[in-house]
Image (cartoon, rainbow over all chains, first blue to last red; front, side, top):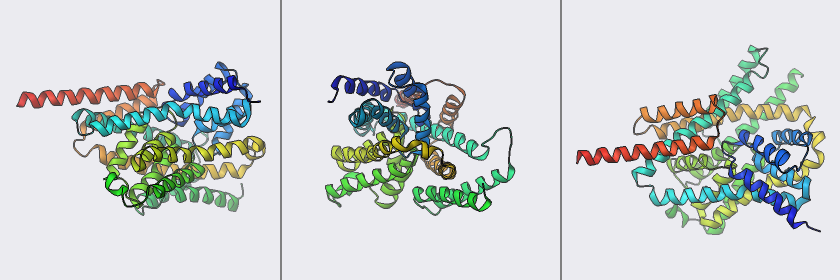
Length: 191
Length: 196
């Protein structure tokens, strides 16, 4: 029997999380923790820690993965669907509203100037994520800097950049190639 | 631009292309930025549904929305390509793979988490992601500094410092940047009027 009240509770919990989830994947994790573990009490902290590990290795947006995981744990497949739809509701409405405003007023100085400023902000946000990821990849262990490893990672990054930026290859195969290459190199050198 | 191109392929063909594109990207990539990079490659370079500049406008809009970037960018790109049905097709494409994968993975996660090769593969992918982000940044930089360089540069540096050094919500940054842009537009307007 489907528990409608519980599904609604899951749905609304994730509507709230989705509405305030600004700032990309890494910002979403603490919001889910707050809403699900502390707020609604849907799961224990240890289960939440499993969720973070799963997010790291599964494809797709972290918020969607989290919603599916939590919803399924609490109320099976209907719960997963309720949570997923909940977390995308507000973002979709905001996105389409902004797009309409943009299309209607894009010739005005006001909108052009605002969008230009937001573009600069977008660049800063992306650059910040890039710095975080690059540091993590170059120096995984802060207490010990391995120069050979730094060189190896730099080389792969440069080749990947060359292929995407100048050779205009699609980013997806390049990224998958980097993953496969790393596995092969590690196998040859014996981890 | 987008309207003109819309006539060349049937609506169904567009919906299918949108669904397949977002489905494939979402099934393989781990980040919202990847989805934007692949969309740019697919819709701008190959299919020519939008110009690079239009895509950059959408990136700016997406960054001002809450929620997963993959979903909001699919919503916007879908709408621009094929109207409301387009955004539904794109969003459906983007949420189906994580939903299905997560449902299965939830059952077997111990075995997956403890596999060392999965970890090494993910680390390798991360290097490619860094290169891809750099590519996006360069595109945005060229676009934003077309008319002047000082103002965009100041906003970029300040926003970067805000994200790196403070722990305040990105929401306030988005509101702040929106407000600064609006104020700047009003100042320009006054100046033009004063000159007239």
